Image 1 (cartoon, rainbow, N blue to C red):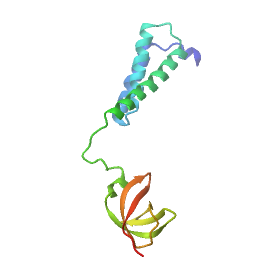
Image 2 (cartoon, rainbow, N blue to C red; image 1 turned 60 degrees about the vertical axis):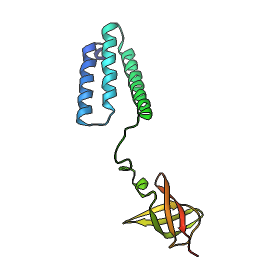
Image 3 (cartoon, one colour; image 1 turned 90 degrees about the vertical axis):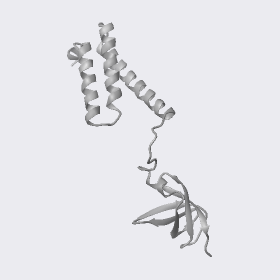
Image 4 (spheres, helix red, strand yellow; image 1 turned 45 degrees about the vertical axis):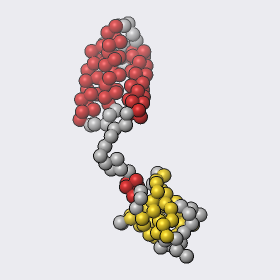
Length: 152
């Protein structure tokens, strides 16, 4: 196995790079692209330094892959993708501002509401069942609520 790995040349990395980028096109995950770029860079390094051993190549590939993914995540944090449907995949956020009736009382800060056919765990001030609450935010799958018209 080691003798096989020692025969890797720069164009092998470039083929791997192209295959990873094609895989990214076929399975859009925004992950294989960065591995493909790392493989292409290792191919370039190997062209410049043909005496580089396979362990160093793997180390460079690993480091460049992690670095390229880190740079991409940093870029995304500074430049978030704008969309006309920002709550599309955040179902709980779609309920912010809406008023619901408590299905189960809020006791010790935790209760339950029913939204369409789904029960949601809520967090807010202690209220009795049937009280109206407004969703003010989310915390994971928990809806944060406030009282609208507390019932006795």
